Image (tube, rainbow, N blue to C red; front, side, top):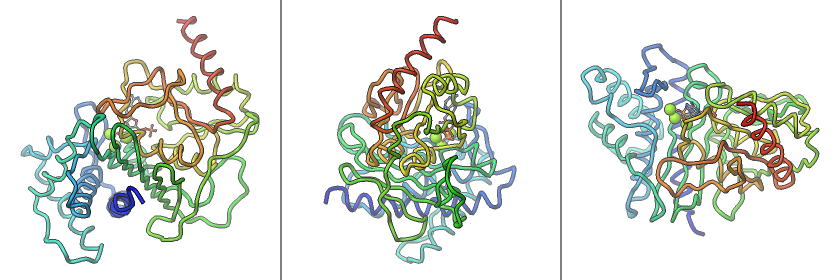
Length: 349
Ligand SMILES: Nc1ncnc2c1ncn2[C@@H]1O[C@H](COP(=O)(O)O)[C@@H](OP(=O)(O)O)[C@H]1O
Ligand SMILES: [Mg+2]
Ligand SMILES: [Mg+2]
Ligand SMILES: [Mg+2]
């Protein structure tokens, strides 16, 4: 089967990274949160997760040339002021590797950690194979103690061919607004998908996998929709106007990160709407894993003009207006509602 060993390596890497993130989220200290030059927060867990995934992929797939497009870089950690943070990250990475139970590696030094983080400097593109990683997607949710995801995908000749999404705080039971109360309150999900092979979910750290599908709702009145928790990441007013035009009755479900794609892939909701503020450029790591998880589960992800998402143009994912995700049945009417709402917005400016 194509990409079988890549999928196994990706699941292993993401599962270990999730373990590191869970440990940090439990003990989150103020000093563990830094601000990057674009003012977005980054924590020791973002760096630690990126170092771990990079290290594990290279170790598990030694015969392949390794290219990784990832969100973080080591610039701040190489400064004098980053030394304590770097030591802490290195300790976390080593502790997590030790908990894996294999002794087949030596302890990583701070230099090894910097090198592993900086392996993520690839630009991607339409030629060859590139891993695409968001070590923590939804850092703001992570810091708040809410939802976040570790999102890893493989880009091959410009197409996403596999994706793995760990959502450590997502309940195994549905989070849909009109769901029966569930007896299970277990949290921690791992979603994964390979092109042509469907999407599966298992408990994070578990082994029993279940195939998942997007919902088959065709009546918008029964649909519910997801959007970012952070209003700075997506225009909430515009989503509400689209939902209203479509006839959606339920209020939006606001959660952080690509956990939205995971939840959609198992039918917890029917629609995901994302409309960034003017001037923001989407990055491929914010959608690569999520989009294959949802499309292999029978959904469709497009930009607001109905174009497929193109991951082959480097680290940016250029889209017209925004990103919309739903099932096959609702997409035509969703596209119409989006078009109307965007026209209205343009004429009111
Ligand atoms: N102004 C902005 N508009 C849209 N997206 C933004 C943004 N600023 C940051 N983001 C992206 O939104 C992602 C989180 O999405 P969500 O709102 O669905 O949780 C962030 O990922 P990180 O948390 O990995 O940095 C970041 O890449
Ligand atoms: Mg970020
Ligand atoms: Mg992100
Ligand atoms: Mg991130």
